[in-house]
Image 1 (cartoon, one colour):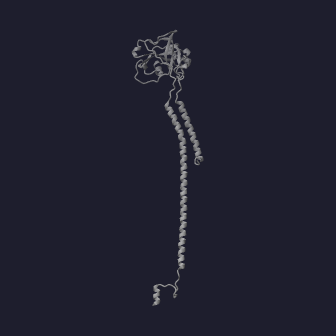
Image 2 (cartoon, rainbow, N blue to C red):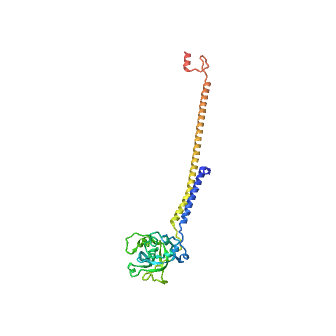
Image 3 (cartoon, one colour):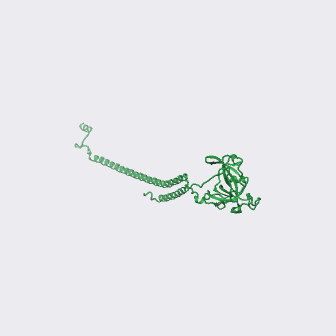
Amino acid sequence: MKTALKPRWILMLILAMVIAAVFVLLSQWQFSSSRDEPPPSPTTTETVRPLTEVLDPLAPLYATNADQMVSLDGVFVPGTRVLVQDRLLGGDDGLWVVQGFAVDASSNSSARTAPSGTPGSPGSSGPPGAPGDEAVIPVVLGWVQHPEDVVPVPEQEGAASIVGRLLPPEAPAVQRPVEGEVPTLSTAELSNLWDAPIYSAFVVASEVDASGAAVPFDRDMTRVVVGPQPQETPVNWLNIFYAIEWVVFAGFAFFLWWRLVADDHRRSLEDAADAAEASHSREGSQVGETGGRREASGLDRATAGRAVDRPVALPGDPSSPSTPSESGMHRD
């Protein structure tokens, strides 16, 4: 506990808390991104709205406006019919029959600000009122199983009013070109084919009227029916995994701080143990030196005592001890 209260470790704890807070915010962002925005409710999308109120030419179609039922007035553009490949209907593979429809410029506010040089703009060479003057939107009229099935079906012509579902375009695909067919319903590709400004969306027609009368636009074809999108909100599990990962990183920041404090505490204990061991070693050496000096002093005193107790032999003193050699000398 004392080690954790050191100023440097308090500062490191504050830094770990800041890093963990950033990781938690990133985790929250990933969690919020894991659920896509739900599609518009059917009560909104099934109410028919004018196309010009929902989308402008060349503007992207956002998810909030996709799947909307729209109405549009204009003219079918002759010579723009194409077939879109790989369309399934009831488990059968076929093609969509698509034709360009020039939206009425009088209800199109964007037509007034069309770039110079485009059909219908002040710098355009096309005559006013021609189909090329207005932005074109692809309209899905029906489904056929084989390309030859559409040969007897005449193209739509003239002015009409259409009601249908507005859907986002598809991405272009690269493949060997087939005359009169396209691999996907890509508005970018159709814009090049039709050489006209185009909406970044397409309409699946459900009603076509001309002069107030219904037009059998899907005659000799199967009508394409697209219902409202399901209201389920999909979950992106990859974002959830990233969110959990950021939480783990936040916990690791505190673990790393605790680990550094524990290592510092262990080092301090080891240093204290080393210091105590060194102190005991010095005390032991001092005691050994003192005992050696005392033992040497005792030997000196014992030697001196023996020297004092030994009698000194005097010449001619019969009481003093004599060696055999000295006795023999006297005897002689």
